[in-house]
Length: 103
Image 1: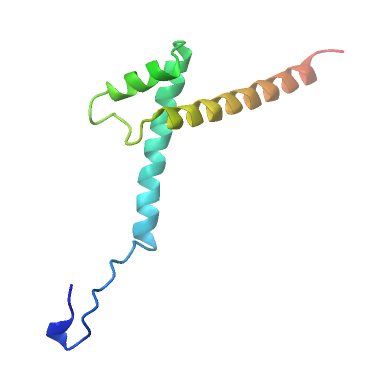
Image 2 (image 1 turned 135 degrees about the vertical axis):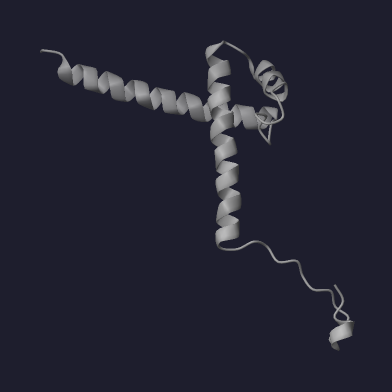
């Protein structure tokens, strides 16, 4: 927007990035999409699907349930995060079962 009408310079005003609450809202919305996507990827992994099959299944979801970001790289990162979380949970369960076993 030019500022000539206000007697200002000819420079265009910069678009401002969202800050504060608006920025937090945007990040929260992205986080919800990520969690839902990871749940869907976990479900498909349990069905023994490979990465390309998972991507095809996510793209085939109805528009309201489809994640915003779907690529092989995103799915790969989700699978890695899920496998790390599952391994940590298995380790925790194994440690707790060893404690409870009579020696």
